[in-house]
Length: 424
Image 1 (cartoon, rainbow, N blue to C red):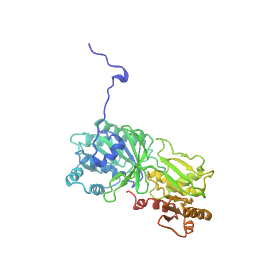
Image 2 (cartoon, one colour):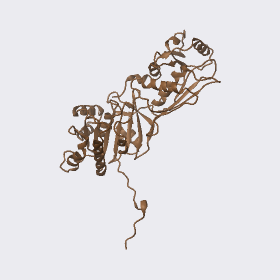
Image 3 (cartoon, rainbow, N blue to C red):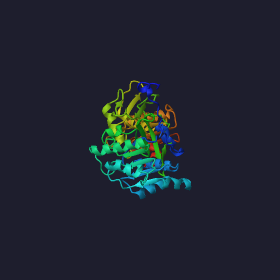
Image 4 (cartoon, rainbow, N blue to C red):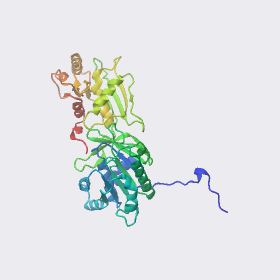
């Protein structure tokens, strides 16, 4: 007599997705994703030139050196450009690994319309006699490469069907996508619902913060993972400062032994929502203006994020415009996950064009008198607008002055390594 089946979900066994192994060079990515899954559908989005293709080819090469075959469908660059980038990334690799990786990444320039992807999959990949049979991973770089509008619902449905068939066949898919001027992923909203994992790259000067707002195979990563591009190989890796969390910038408001502090935290908003500002007791419009100023800095994309700001002001003092410079530095520090040195003092109001405006002369006089009287612990580095910096008649080895005409001067003076340049 046959044993009756267990009712409902009780009768459904657990299915473990097979993991695709990544080598030590991409261990940082595996740790953030939880698992890189065979048959997983991944959406990688970001602005042009931000490093999406670099990360995609890194994954393909990493799989290739382990014997896995990747089909790289090109819609925006040539196969020669892809090969050149791949060889640059592999600078320093053993020659055997280089040859193995290159031989297993197959470029394909013949897919002119994503509407043909299901047919292409059946004839060229699933067919045992197909040109790309045996493919483990497919990268489409990018899905908007031929000018695909978000309203092309029929074409996107074919893309979803292609992804569904790949998932059933255990083929991993990486879809590279653009973002709009507002920072949203280009395409219809259901694009994000039809993938297993969403990775979003943003700009932050020489860094590329990576977010994972959706992940069916592991935890979402809403805290930015700052990536840095190797200047010789262009390969992406986690920046060495990624564990720094301090976001406190100090200032000066007058005769008081306690220096005012501006504390800030920046994070990705909850998936599917817009960013918000939490700044109790502070002028919201001014905070929005300062956030907009930061976004105007070349290679800095800090829009549509959550901002949490707190000012610790001595006595009964209230927020003043001259705290604009330390506030923006604290916001940038949190976004980059970098520390602000405790001996830095920032003074200056930021105008609409990011110029640092002068502060009252008597405040600079009081500041210097407090320094000479050892009321403020040394060493010190003062960040001041030019007019205010000129009032400091002399400095010592323990006190230096950084002249800041614009917000960028304070940023690069605080973190000189940011001036080295950005990622591609």
